[in-house]
Length: 445
Image 1: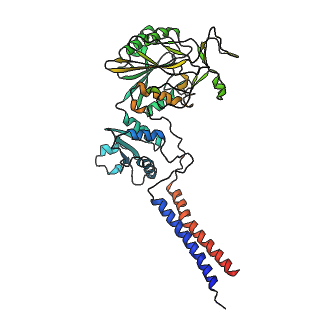
Image 2 (image 1 turned 90 degrees about the vertical axis):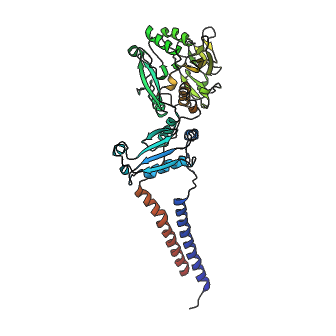
Image 3 (image 1 turned 60 degrees about the horizontal axis):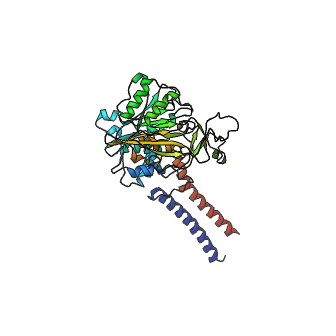
């Protein structure tokens, strides 16, 4: 039997290729486990921070310390480390301290700590996080930006939209957004309280359906005269008795419902939904770029008292009009009775009072912030911008309010182990075995 060096060379090449594949696979697995650089190639960049988180992190001064109170075998340890690492990629100085609650000598303090709780400290303040999501973490950072706890009071007792009820007409979704941004929201019955509390940062009149009692209207007027901040959501069917209070505040509602024919061209099959695509230059609308939808809106015109300044925040398009007749059948513009567009839907009123700027906002619609419509296009961003500006939280105005849905895949340790074993052991062995089989078949050929 004659020795064929060419067969030996071919076999050696096959073995070398198999060994190279195994080495490359193992090296790739080791690099993936130890690499410090990351690239997010997911379709919706779900492993990267959304703009709202980036903007919030940039606004906070150093230092930022995250304390994670975890027992050694806490199942969420890797999830927490991954969440905090997203922020550390942008802020290297952000510290993560993992503390075992059972090791704290102060038993009274240890009992107040929940296993798995995150505590974020910055700007001389501390916030707690119980859910390991980007939205919860960033909302905690937002609360750290605020100077103090601020109270928002929603007037109730006249059929107003409630921040506490989940009905389509009400504002419970807005309540959750404001709560996440650090505001304390409560309802206020003026007939019972007989005063607007002194610590109220913002008073909200959200689409009252019934007239105020004379004493209640006087309480609101007195609150504004003393420098109080007000957000008034007005409707086409506003009670006539509130017209006097509106003139005192500094505006007038036109008795009309906005009809916008442009909605059909944009795919909205309802002409009484006005679409606002452009906003006037003003801090309250800075950063709001998406169009907002205003269903059953009414025009509002400035009638400012002496000392006040009015600015229009946004208005309808030129083709919209204020319909004074019933909204039934084919509605058309009547030059003799209807109001031609463009029509103002949002006003900002300001004046200097006691050495600071007093702020009031009037919006000719309340539906745009209701549970039914707040999720449409730019409605939520516009609403939160108005509240932040009214509450003089100017540092929050350039921070977005929306977060992408959390669609990340969270695996348990045993699942991660199975996947790692498959990629690091099973696949390399399969490639090697395949190389051996192919080599033997070629030698026999």
